[in-house]
Each structure stands twice: as structure tokens, then as C-alpha cells.
Image 1 (tube, rainbow, N blue to C red):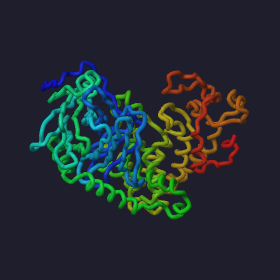
Image 2: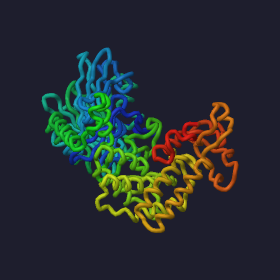
Image 3: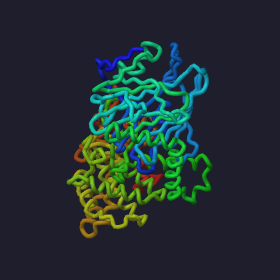
Image 4: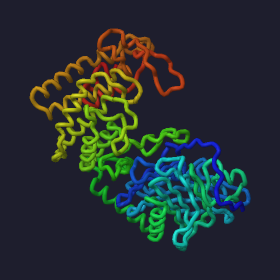
Length: 550
């Protein structure tokens, strides 16, 4: 045993996140403000107290016998995840190895900011599970501190950074405190994984680590319940964690399920197709509805992030990832909420969008929940989508008394001034005339005109007609090498440079294809995307239009 108080500092840091390949996302519909994700059979990012603030990178397990054998669970080739009820995001994860089976049940406490993990190790009696948690409090990888300590006589692992505190506590199957041997370290140098990698067993017992990216570790009993508590201090987090453990996993899980069942009862599967769909399709519907609801914040009603993930997270230190708000994704999520009858949530989306509209009428490319910008590109469709949501809610008689005329006036003014060119397409890459962006802008002019009246309405409709009539002239090409190769008369291009508005031949200009290791250096007329299908979705072209079926 190497019992040294302070863990050695990491000499080189490259903090990253977890994989974006999530297998489950969850939250409790109660007083708690905690969201969790899973991937590769373990817990990945956990968010608190807002859905855009991750607090850990991951929480996983090592199974070892103390004699040289050890197996990190997330590296096993396959794990099985199941939901006993598709309406309730309470995952049961099963790991199988020739020497053991490990089962993990996960839920958030509906009353506290605590994630509970019920675990069971079966098989070889010499094996024990070890906890390994990488804290990233406040999304910060550089300034976390970790401690081994106790809270009112009970062992606890602590981390703290700025206004955030974290506590890990455990009880065994008999209800007694059960963090058996603890250590904290710095990721990449003195954490538990490095201990096993170098020594084949747990040798280090560091009592303090940081400031830096810290990892918390402990040997656990073969069966028990682990609590990850979060709060405004490490003491507050410990109080939350032990309160949840005192109540017990089964009680918290029952309350977790009650909250989700109640929400689904208020928004049942529509009868007109529920009886016509097979069971698997009905399960997919309710599971999809659950995923939508999980992505909703509680500090800012109506704010839904695009995804509880960070693209290429295992190689990225991005602060934003996809846990940000895009007005496009937000309105598309609201459309799904309207379709399933959750018009109250959809109306909250609209009021949130009204509050975050910029002075000139557009919306930020994306933003933190509180309205601060992250990326600041300008995408024309993101200004059109909120107008369409207002129209949709009015169509469903769910607009109530929300004041939308000012928002719509400013949005349409921006579209008139900036269109038909967009600063970026909906893939956030290139500027020009894009079929998807232009379709949304035209639809917004048409729908928004109904809210204006008088000459303003007439002008919006006239401009929509003009852009609609010129759409193929700007975005459809014929007789190209690509068309001849595939023996088609023509096709809609991915995007046309803005020069198409003033001169012929713009389709021959080179357009950079971003986010690729090698740009093929293709002209606009040789690049194809499926963006044009939005023309059919929004009724600007029929499905059998010659340009669509070409």
C-alpha cells in the first residue's frame, strides 16, 4: 500500500469528454435538476443544475481480483441495455465476462440532485468492483480538487470546483456505508486506471488531488447502491447523496417511474394510429417522446438542447458540443411535441425563442441556455423556424395569449433584408443560396404574412412568390457531367454561391466542402444534397414535380 496524502500532479494534460455514442439519456420529472447519459455500458456525462452544464466526464467500473487480473467494463466488447418500460428511461445494463456478470441499474432521484446506481457482481468470488469517476465540475477540467473524506462518520469521495460540489457515497445490501478503500488522483498520472495499468491491482491511497482534472476511486462491495450527489458545495452534495441512499434505490426508482408514467398519461399515443401500429412501433413512439422530454431544461422552460453529447467527445475538449440550443432543432422538437399533444411544452419553446431573439430579428447560430452566444454564424432558416412555430400553435389553437407580432415582424424584416442568401447552410458550413434554407424562409414569409395584415402582409407574400418562382433558376442545374454520368436531366445542388443572383455561371464556381480531410475541389453544380426534400415537406413543390423526381 502506497499511502501518500497528495496525489502526484499530471505533467501533461489533454482533457477530453466521453463518446457521443449514447445508449440512453435520462432525468427525473420531479424537483431534481440532474440529467445523465450512458455509453459503452457505463455512465457518461452527467449534467446539473442545467442541461448545458456537464459535471463529470464518466463514471465506470473495474472488476479485479487483487492478484493481477483486472477488466475495465467499458472496454468489454458488448454490453446489453434494456428498459423494462419504454416510457421510463431507467436503464438496466448487463456486462458479461467469462469470470463474472455485472448488472447496473440507473435512475435519478426525483426529489434530489442525485444519480443512483444499483449494482450487483456475480461469478468468481475473488472478484470485486472498483469505482472510477472523472470529475469535470462546471465543465472545467483544470481546476477541480478531490478528497477522500467522511461525512458525519460515513466515508465519502468529494470533488469541488467553483460553485459546484460533488460527493460519491455507497451503501451495501444491508444498508451500511460501503466505500471500502478510497483514493483520488489526477487523470492520466495518478488515477485508479493508471494504478491498475502499472501495478495490476490497487496500490495507491491518495487522500487529496488537484487542482486539475481529478478522478475519484474506491473498492466496492459485490452488491450495493452508489450515489453521485451534486450541490453548491461538497457538503451539500454529500447531504443529498446520503439522503437518497437512506431512502433507497427501490423507493427512488418507484418515484422516478411515477413521474414518467404521469407525463405519458397526459400525452398518450394518438388513438388514430396507436391501434394500427405493431407493438414495436408503439414502443418506439413512446421512447421517442421520452427522449424529447429528457432534453428539456428546467431553469429555462422551453429550452431544449440539441443533444446530450459532444461529437467525437473521446478526442475533444469542446465546451459546447451539442448541449446547446439551436433555434432550428428547437422548433423541430416543438413540432414533434405539438404532434403528440404536448402543446404546453411547445408554447414554452415559443416564449423562450421570443426572449432570445436578437435586436435585428435573427437568432444566434447556437447559444447557451441563458442566451449567451457560442457560435455566431447566421443561418437564414433559423430565423424562419420560430415564425413557423407561432403559425403551427395558432393552427392548433394553442397560441393562447402569447404576443408574437413583434417577433414575427422583426424576423420577417431580417429575412427580407438578408435573403435569399444565407450566411451558412443548415449544415453550418457554406454560404449562398441553399434549397433548405430558402424553403424555410419562403414558408416563414407566407405564414408570417397572416399575422401582419395590410401592406406588410402583401409585401411578404409578393417576395415569397418571387423567390419561389426563381428557386429552380438559382438551385437547379442541367446537363452537368454528373447529370450525364447518372443519366438524369438535372438535380438540385447543395448550395449555389451568392453570385447566382447577379450573373450566370455561378454554379461553376468552386465551393469548399468543409469538415473533410481532403476537399475534392468540386464546383457548386457538381455537389448534391437532399436539402431539396424540404420543398415537398413544406408544400412548395409536389412530390411528383419533374424537378423533384428528376
